[in-house]
Length: 334
Ligand SMILES: C[S@@+](CC[C@H](N)C(=O)[O-])C[C@H]1O[C@@H](n2cnc3c(N)ncnc32)[C@H](O)[C@@H]1O
Image 1 (spheres, rainbow, N blue to C red):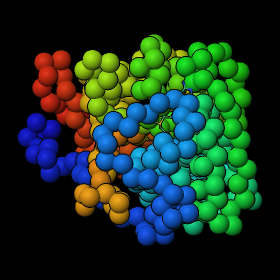
Image 2 (cartoon, protein in one colour; image 1 turned 135 degrees about the horizontal axis):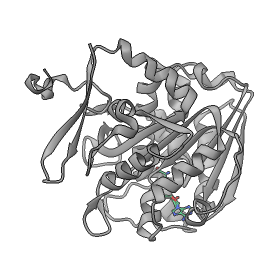
Image 3 (cartoon, helix red, strand yellow; image 1 turned 180 degrees about the vertical axis):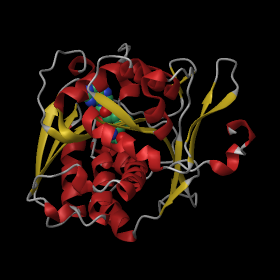
């Protein structure tokens, strides 16, 4: 019976234990030697929109960029271990949208995972769209990507759009993107008082994703606007989305995918912790905390869900209930 299990030893899902990443010297040589990245220990180097300041963009590159790369790299490494890239990317051109891309760390982590699956050279062209207000970071990022992935034929497009407005707009159904990445930008929209920013971003992504496409949504896990933990807001809006007549299904975290629109959790806190090296940091290990989610179009999601019948592990995520108590949400099969 579920109540009798020791939850601490049965946690099996990605992120249930700290994930460790060791970046190569080559990666950091590119950042610090080729692009003069700067590492800063200042806690609150403000993530201001529209930095046109080259120095701040270089602080981003040396300090936050490796963090996000560690996040998407670890996530997609985990995901591709059970679902091969060829299930999703069938053409010889790959089209990526990176929302709030800055200098493309989310894309870089994803492409490293593709590369480790020997899948990156399959593409004749990788077209990457950035939606951001910071064109300086975009220009830096496209040079970094080109240096990190020599021999890949990239085509970069910068769309200067304010996401606060974009997610509020009626968008036509256009299946353009193989993958939409949205990493740590929605919290900035919420701080700017955009209501239901996660919900609107998911509705936006569903309109532009190809049928086999992937939507990765992730954000910080700290409290914002007073003291509400961001995952509480994110998970609530995802639950609201799943109850709509929608086109996307969540497939990660697995318990969310299993319970879907029947989820009744309130104040659900989800977090993955990744540790990684940064040679410029005085600390031996850097820590990234994030809350990743993965969505697929419903038909595609159904195929993945059918695999749950074969799962013989127990997948558990923690959430905090209304009384502030830690509870566990699990998918238990067999
Ligand atoms: C914290 S950074 C995240 C960058 C990257 N995605 C990552 O995960 O590390 C947020 C990015 O979103 C951009 N951004 C913030 N608000 C925006 C808005 N309203 N419209 C467009 N871009 C925005 C910022 O310029 C910045 O590049």
